[in-house]
Every structure is written in C-alpha cells, then in structure tokens.
Length: 361
Image (cartoon, rainbow, N blue to C red; front, side, top):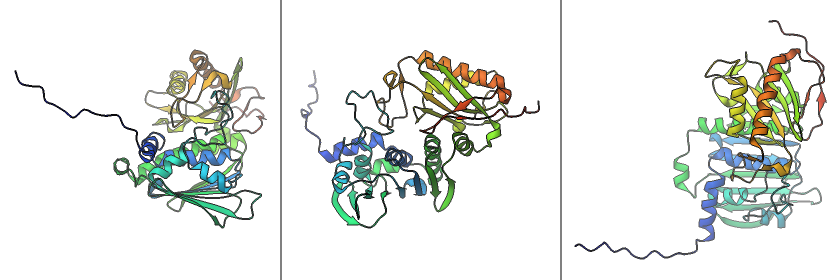
C-alpha cells in the first residue's frame, strides 16, 4: 500500500491590516460605480445642496466628487480613512439607521485599492485640509485651499489590486453603471442640485426640483405622462410616480425604487412590479417608474450587504401586496384619477397636484 502524500501542516496566522483592507475593498467597491455611489451618499448625508461629479473612463481612471456639505476637520479626516469610523451611526443596535451610509468602510476601502485625495473645509475654519491615501499608505492632513464642503478625487482605481482591475468592463459599460447610480441618487435627493460629467460631456445638470420634476427628469419624460401613487397600509406607505403601459423599455433600467429614501435594487420589489404590470404590458417589456416606500425603521434591516442595496423586510408579504395593489389601482385610474394624490421623495414635503385632463383613448 502506497503512503499518503504528505503536506506541510497549515497554520493559522493573523492577516496584516493592509490585506484586510484589500479584502474589504473587494466587498464594498466592486466597480467604479460602487465607489461613486459611496462618495455621493456621503455628500448627501453631509447636508449638501449642490453636488458635482466628473468621471474619466467610467470612473476607472478618475472620480471627482465636489459638494457644499458640512465639511470635515483635520481630526475627522484622519478618522474618515480608518475602517469602521463614522459620524452617522447613533444606534449601536443597527435599528434606527436614517442615513444612506453607516458602516464606515467606503473611504478606507477606496484608499486601500486606489489613490485617494480628500480636501475638506468646515464653515468655522479659515482654511481647508487635505489628506491623501495611496494604496493604503496615509499622508497626514495638510493645509490646502478650498471652499466650505468636501472634494474627493479617486484616481487609478484598483491599481493596488490588479486582479480586480483586470476584470473591469469597457469604459462605456462602466459609464453606464455610473449613470444608473447617479440617476438613482438624484431621485433620492430632489432638494440637491446635481451636475454629472462623463469625459467632459454633461450627462445631466439638475437644479433643486419638486418631487415630480425630479422624477420626470430622471425618467426622461414629462410630468404629464406620470401617474401619481399614494397608498398607505398601516405604517407602510407607497408613493411615487409610474408611467402607463404605453411607455415601457426593453430593460429594467427605467425602474427606480427608494426605501426610506435609500435607492435599492431589491428582487422582491422588482418581482412585485412585474406582477402588477403583467396584465397590461407585453412579455419582455419593462415598465418605467419611480417608487418610494416608507417603512418603520424597526421593520427593516438595511445591514444585509456591504453595498446596502439589498434589504430585509419584517413582513415581505405585506410589502409585496401593497406594491402590487397600489400599482394596479394607479394603472386602473390612469391619469383620470381624482386630484389630491401626492408623492414624496427625499426630505421634501408632500405636494398636492391638481387633476390632469383625460388622455385620449
């Protein structure tokens, strides 16, 4: 009988902090659009009313995000690039999460795999401060020039993780993902003006808008084509705007869903939308809409995935039923429904719109 081959006995060792950061970066920052999403969410959470985004090669070469939010002090800048440091998490039970970000992982993950520069100034400071992180190597904050707010520049994304960079798609594909991210975030914050440039070409430049104005801009339509929704079941509310069955797309890119102002791509909600539209649109076509679910925080778990785009509901059946029923009733009424229907997005107050004239049948 031959002897079994001998292998060196594996031993457990502690990974270095840099390797841990690289592993975390792979979970949080899977592509340029994911990094962009985290940066713009931070700007919205910082109270910005104006955000400018400029991308090169879909964000692979450069991501530039400028906001007029509250800014950071030098001490806060140093904490911001450390893992699990955040100003947003006030509830350590992870229940009362009201901000878009809360994990404290995005900036350290980006800094571990790219070249990161953060220049920030608070209203109380007479100067801005700049901190740099290159592949995990931190340069302490230095005085810099800059207005109140924050500017973050990310270059050479994934240069420190060549395996991840090798699997990025073309600039066109990455730009498409970045555009989708920015449209979702624009919808979640109509109170915030947003300007987005792709390779020096203006993708969109939106001023502060009403909810229906922002929805029309994001959906690339006119307000008169939108059917308002406002359904409430207990403490759960479904509001927003949907297009009728005559306006569909070949993909699901025209479906925008917010849950407590958080853009999500939840499969259960997408299935509910498909079921609601099944009787009125042909197979293979996708409806166009911007929906907003308001759910009590204690009945929702947002700490499911590092990207924070997937959720768990305490009662999925209730949510599914509300979405299917609400969309069905809205489609049944079309634009002939009685007035007084309103929809709310972001932190803007609800607005009541007058009834629109009947559309020709």
